[in-house]
Amino acid sequence: MVAQLRIYTINRGMMDSFLKLFNEHIRPLHDRLGIPVVASYTNADRTEFIWVRRFNSLEEIPAKEAEFRTSPERVALGERPQSHIAKMEVRVIQEVPAPARVR
Image (cartoon, rainbow, N blue to C red; front, side, top):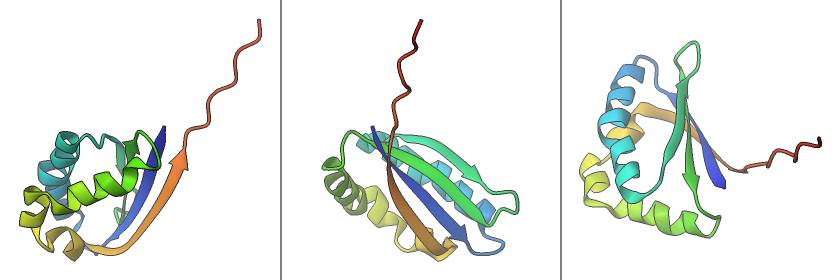
């Protein structure tokens, strides 16, 4: 499995609005496009939104991201998502399989 760990610093006072946008539009669109969101969090002071989305392979990421960006649903959102985000970090991560248990 390959995933993206995405860390967004949200503009002060905009977390509730961002969460509504994410849950009503962004997450459902990811689901429809076959990009599972496997986890999402806010940090304790609610300035960061941290989420993980999964892909089948590294090679799949560019095509899936392009499909997301050009979808009618995403285009209709315009700059709304970006207007909430002061900073964005994206890290590609790969699962480390657990070692086999020895009996």
